[in-house]
Length: 115
Figure 1 (cartoon, rainbow, N blue to C red):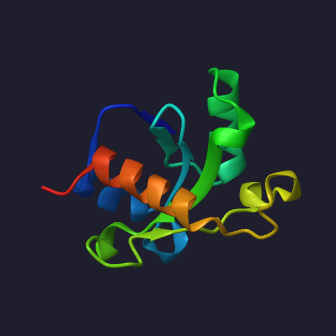
Figure 2 (spheres, one colour):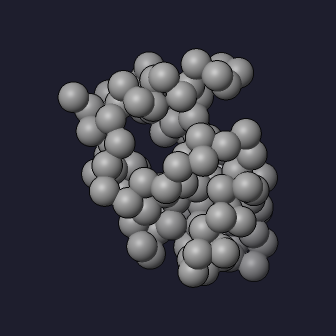
Figure 3 (tube, rainbow, N blue to C red):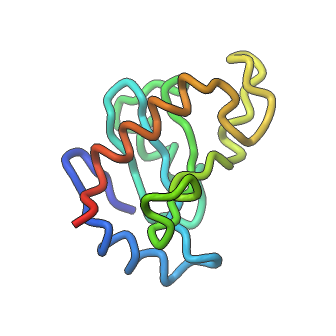
């Protein structure tokens, strides 16, 4: 697992994706602190790491990053079991709120250096 506070290169993400099925990198984004944890086999492990380090549950959202799809809508995919939160009006594995999706994408694009 790696905590990304400042930045990570797209090349590093591509290398990480080689060890995963479907060439993806799992990530959990803290939308309050604008950080993310990447490169674990389960979103729940990344979520636990952030919770143990001061993040609040309501700010954590699971995504999959497909580094080879950079620049396309498929670069960030909202799909994680940790996203199922009826108490926050999110009843699926996706992130249902379009504004929250946009915020997550903005954070990811800020943290991932494309060159």
